[in-house]
Image (cartoon, rainbow, N blue to C red; front, top):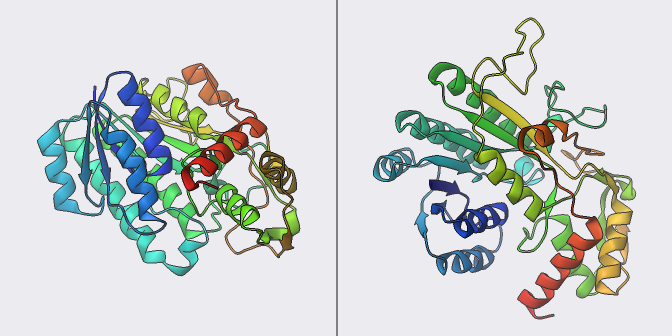
Length: 335
């Protein structure tokens, strides 16, 4: 297949692209290489991809309406994996317009490209953050997600609604994937695992929010990449059991699906830090701080629907995944 992967220089995008190339697909990777975090890390990811046959890189912003339209017209993609977005919950409190441009304007540009060029399936990144203030655990795709606690979460919820509209109006198969705290080698520098590892090695205190009383469903990046590709290979289809009188938000009469991708194992933050300490052979100095605006206390994924759909769910143990990240970090930064 010929696949467009947006955000190809990003953390998840690189891993998904590698998996597609390894099986022989042709991939056009799109990224704007913005400076939200260290651009050199994105360039290093790209360098790995550019040594693999079948890959072509295009530097372009998803918010560039004319550029995206031209890209779709030129290439005739079979499938699209849309991972490009302005990430980060806390950053959305300081720079909301970046989220509107990338996550809303950029997303409608993707939908229009797919609509006008007969793309067979659009898979896009949603987020566990859409569950917002929900307290029922585990989070299931059929739960209402009407109370986001950050603008980032609101844009991801909006993406799901926009995708459904295009599935309904134009028959475009769309699948949204709600990622749960993805971690692993080549991870983002703004994520807790990277921040904690860097600080501990530099003998600086780590900032632990809500005094450590939080839980996250940490999901290893290889499991996520595998899930993305498996979902891509099974385009969304109408749900024959869909009941408009009691609608399931994760399915539809249209070719539309939403799935969680998580490890089914919420880990206390202090246990997570303990795994990092074990992998590094060092003890962290902890600076305990209050809960930050936009944060949620816990995430926990129900992945039954994903398992039923593609026959596999994430399963990498946290200790194994953290050890792999630490090994990569030490090698990449030579520490």
